[in-house]
Amino acid sequence: MRIEIYYVVAILVIAIATFVVAAVINRILLRYFRAVSEKLKVDETTYAVTRRLVVGMVYFGGLLLIVSVIPAVSDFTVALLAGAGFGAIVVGLAAQETLSDHIAGISIAISRPFQMGDVLTVKGEYGTVEDISLRHTIIKTWENKRLIIPNAIIGNEEIVNWSIGDLPVYWHVDFGIAYDADIDIARSIILDELDKHPDVMQEQNKKADVVGLSDFSVDLRAYFWVCDRPTA
Image (cartoon, rainbow, N blue to C red; front, side):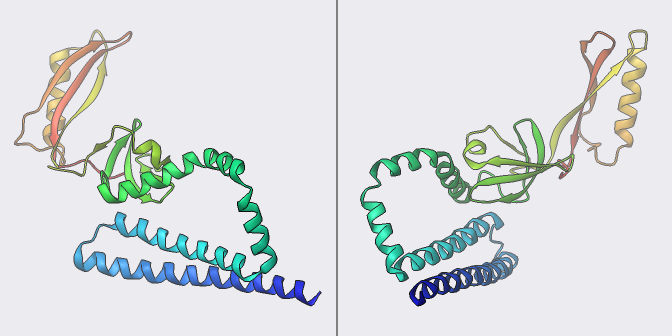
């Protein structure tokens, strides 16, 4: 009975210590990387993924410590691993997607096709990269929604990164007018409003053209330059 109580206490102590150490390390790394980012302009994406890797290793180390400290658990684990060939294959297949997400997360941190704070268009959604974890990427859309995309998926998607390269963007807005409306007057009103808009680059070319005929409207499209795309 005393031995069983000892094992229970040992498991609790190691588990609590692991959680405490992981939390402390996470907080220290968070403060350290923020300070380094401000001084050396280090990309926030890289240190976010690195911080999560270190914390994950702490949890894994705590698990290994529990297995090694308790003989009964250690012997059971050795026996389980010795005869777990088929089980390992099954688990490996089940965890294939999760593993690919983690590998893609590390790849994103290294290759940096986008970074935290970048403005993207991905899967038809427009928004700002809010967080990049090992498992997924969180994008805050212009509707203030959180789009959570697994890293393996977003890594294979075609992405428009509005934060890379020159900030000025050639943009367009569509309008619909009635069939009996005067197209020239509508075009003149659109261009006048573009001239008044503070975000439109007035020195660049602006135009409004008819682009189609819908069931209930004549479709016009205004083309203009803006300094940059707004964040979501």
